[in-house]
Image 1 (cartoon, rainbow, N blue to C red):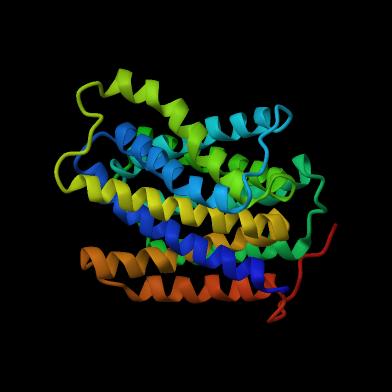
Image 2: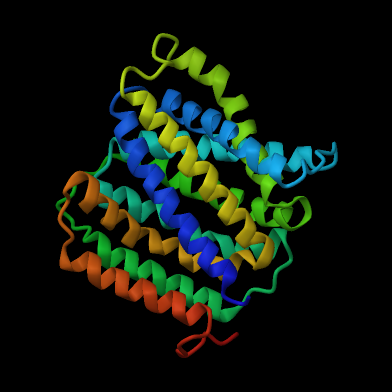
Length: 290
C-alpha cells in the first residue's frame, strides 16, 4: 500500500506526457487556446462515467470556490505552456517548466501546513539537476523572452494547481476532483477561445482524433494523480514530476522519431535516483536544518 500513490503518480505522469505528445500534433493544426479548450471539453465527457461509477459524489457550494480558483490557474497554465513551447526549443521549455516541482514543497508547507521535509527538498533539487543534465541547454540556444516568461509563469501556476488538488483530493474524492478539473477549465476557456480564435475553434479532419485522444489521456491521468494526492503528501510526490523527462524522450522517439541522446539517459538516471531517495528505497545524505 505504501508504494501505491507513487505507482499511480508515475503512470499518471506518463499518460500526461502521452497527452502532451498528442497536443503537440493538435496545436500544429489549430490555435493553442482552441486546442486546449477541446482537451478539457472532451476530458469532461470522459470523466463523467468515472464520476457516475463512483456513485455521483455530491457537489457542494463549500467546495466550489477552491475548485474554481484551481480551474482558473489550470486554464492559464495550460494555454501559456502550449503557447510558450511553440516559441522555445523543446529542451529549454521543458527545463523551465520543471521549476514547478521545486515550488510545490514550500507552497505545500505554506498552504497545507505540511512540515517541510529535508529529504523532499534534497530529492527535488537532485531531480532538477537531472533535468538540467537531460536538457543539454547551452549558451548557443536562442533567447525568446516572451516564450521564457510564458513557460515560467505556466510552471508557477501549475505548482499552485497541484497544491490545491492535494487540498481537495482527500476531501472530495478523485472522481469529483477529476470532473471539476476538466469541466471548469473548459467553461473558463470557451469564451476566451471564442474571442481569440473565432473561426478556428473546430478541429479539422483527422485532428478530431487527436482532440479525442488528448481528452481521454488527460482524463485518465488526472484521475490517477487525484488518487495519488488523496493518499500522499504533495511534497513527497513532487520529485516524481521529473520522470516526465523519460516519458517525453520515449514518446518523442516512438512518435516523432526523435533520437535519445546520452544526456537524456544520464539525466533520467539521476531523476530515478532522486525518486528512489524520496521514497526511501535508497539512502543519501539528507539536508539538515540550520
